[in-house]
Image (cartoon, rainbow, N blue to C red):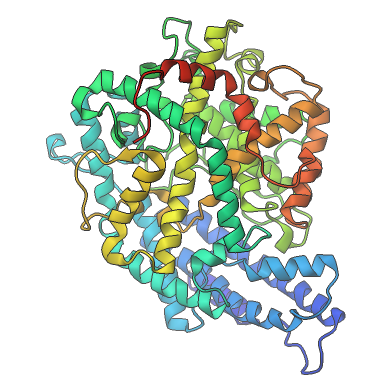
Length: 599
């Protein structure tokens, strides 16, 4: 640990080349950014190696290593970003102008210049993430046995006993209570760092990462939400009625839905209550999970299936090191962060995933998503490191989900996971409902997490009202409520991984929109002309070429340019998701006739 700390200190101490006092030149700017790219490669590789070890071996020592990596990066950025401003008024070539912009927004959680505060912030970040990863609920009824998030989530997804559902939900949210005070300090320190970089607060910094002003970005999100909200409200109305039939007074006939009834710890997706809301429950089930179990499909084989989708499009196979270094199953001998993630640890094709795989359809789809990240990494790994990211962060999340949209019943039949596929309209509506419970149900949650954080960072919500603000937003956007009263002794936002891990969340809302826009364009490239919900681009080299053309740009161009390469459009457009679910929306409207919708 001492050796790594000394290395990180040495690298972070390397300030970017100090420009002379005279008027700056383009040549000096190029030398500056060449040095920054070299330094960031060393820093980010060291940080991500420490992060990989930490998430796979959760101990106090690895927490410290991860904190050292974050602190070293923050120390360097605290010097590099202000130093880059010398070139602000210079007419730069497009590649340098793009690097200037990307460097200015590159710190997710900017640390203060003060070394003591910088180290304090890095320690809090590491502690929050580690606390989440180690979180367990130890119910008295189990006489000392503790349940981790996977086990508690399993109860929520499978149980239909209200008391068991509520207990599992409340138990997990207990793990976040100790985070509250540290989170308030984290907000103070991070905002100090943001102000030193010229942003009013961290939320404004995050909203600046989309090639538009923070205000314009908020307006664009609101425009997209306005397009899709009627579809969400129709789904909510129907689902609430079915849950009221099942749970009686525990789920009101009107008003918000208690989260545990939705089968998911955060109420962010509702796929696990499909059995309660299926349009035609007597239709033969598309039970891919049962097929995975009955066919004894091993975790590695599930990864190979997902890889096979990408190679069918013309992507090169994953390197041998991927198979040697990835984590596919939860270890029995140590604590790990099981939240699925994809990595290029050395930023040069060292591709990996970390997923605690179970033989379920959800995990098969997750693997297609995570490999989407890895094949994106693979497509741009020769670019300067400042360009080694998605066109914006929603693109990275959206690519894997785009591929997952091609995991259709026909695709599953072609790879041997379904014996046959029904072409009936009832089967189609069942499939659309199952996907809507995942994709449509998620949309307002994709807005919620960062809307709450933006209010916290800006000071609109103070620490005394963290929890109240969280639930007010959940009700406003999602129409969801807690199963029992909550107060300010609780810190329910911290029970969500992305809050504990400082991961911005607007990207997921954008991805939920982009993926259908990408899917429609790729289906057209593949020569498909049928209903959008039945299209799979599996095996289409033409679609693969179009996809790779966009991925290979990384962040070297503004995202509208990358969007245009794939779709021919220059702004996000939610019409594709409406087209995709149009048959289901018509059916939902018929079912909801006479019901009091909304909350």
